[in-house]
Image (cartoon, rainbow, N blue to C red; front, side, top):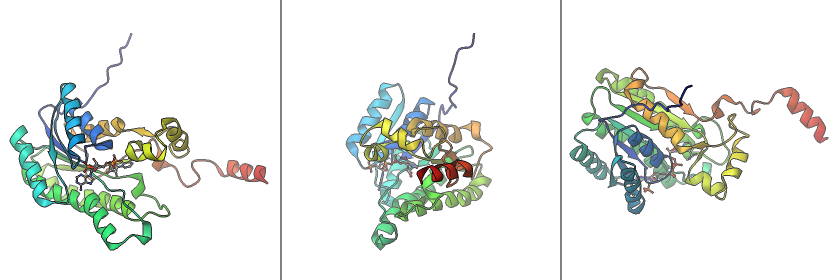
Length: 275
Ligand SMILES: NC(=O)c1ccc[n+]([C@@H]2O[C@H](COP(=O)([O-])OP(=O)(O)OC[C@H]3O[C@@H](n4cnc5c(N)ncnc54)[C@H](OP(=O)(O)O)[C@@H]3O)[C@@H](O)[C@H]2O)c1
């Protein structure tokens, strides 16, 4: 008889900062990292939510602190890194997860472009720049991409541009820091059960899966912990030979073409039936 034992990568003794971990995927990434043994700094502006995530992680036996931080402010990034090192003694993992979805497509104002790229791309790059002097051989920076940054979508411009740029930045960063034995990896989710999908589906997981199954061959939307577990793996020593690439964690979303994986024969049959 075999007993199913979930094997988690070990992050024992490592300390991580996860930006945008007061809610959504970031909080699930923090949950996954702490479940693997890492100590985690929760980062975001919502103090109530940040304190609640820390309390929850501690109640599960994990180690976490909350550091209120606006990642658009350089001094607050410095304070966050300093506090992490003062508390945990070192910094080994940075997860650039925070994002803004503010996007009015080609009608977006210059200010909107600056704000969305500022949070999604520039603050991630500055966080990496400021973290690097504290990282050591074996450390890893994980940048969140998105299927949204890989395909055209009417009415959107800022968020997809920021996510596409994040993947390119990850490659340049990876090559730059490789000589120091530090890795940079991108992880790109598709639709994941999180506040934005909860809102769009009017808080119905059934409705989210019903719509999601059209685009995700695995037939549903993803769960935050499914993203978190992959982030934990890529940040761990188990992934020591992976750098610079983008890892899609998307239920197969990115392997489909615009025909949604349905053959021309079926499309023609459907078109003829509709006549
Ligand atoms: N959800 C999905 O289906 C999906 C799909 C593909 C990719 N992703 C990627 O996954 C990541 C998380 O997405 P999500 O949907 O979970 O996001 P979300 O629910 O909107 O959460 C965004 C997080 O970013 C933080 N944040 C925003 N601006 C900030 C700032 N100036 N300073 C510090 N923190 C800031 C927010 O914290 P505060 O409000 O506390 O500041 C919040 O914790 C993003 O990189 C996104 O592109 C998500």
